Length: 244
Image (tube, rainbow, N blue to C red):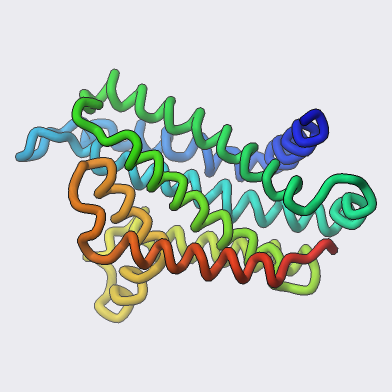
């Protein structure tokens, strides 16, 4: 356990080396929330607030940053510094390395989600009553796995760590800006809409929004599609995993 804890600490230190990643994953959602606070407090016809609709999107944004952008930096750094190659010569396994990265990012995500929900309840009147928390947590973990394996795939797809880092950056910003986070899919040009609607980001937002609001998660096949994409990227991540 001490060795696993050491690897988790390593992942935290690599995260802290990149201030832009810390900002995008933890601070940016709250900056956006502050800038849009007058809109977020508006009550909708069904009695919910705009903040209710925004919570899943903010969570997806943080998951993407931790699992695609940060993972790209972290894994590329580990490859460039030969850390992974040295790790192979120790009792630590690839599974230990991946598990520690998952746990470290889940700790950051958990702190973020608890803080976001607390702010939502205290400042925007979001109600926590009648939420299916087991379903919400289950979908949250599925979405986390989706983007974790997407990040792991792109972090390994290129021959060198530096090139893979660039690919992760491109993948992250494509998923971020075309996935309906900053610009609504409805307002996009007609030619871009079908692409945006089928990106993992849009599917994940719809799925987590359904779980959060208590509507049927099977509508739109989002659960099925997200599950299939997760399995495909998990298999690809294992196949293309590189130590250097």
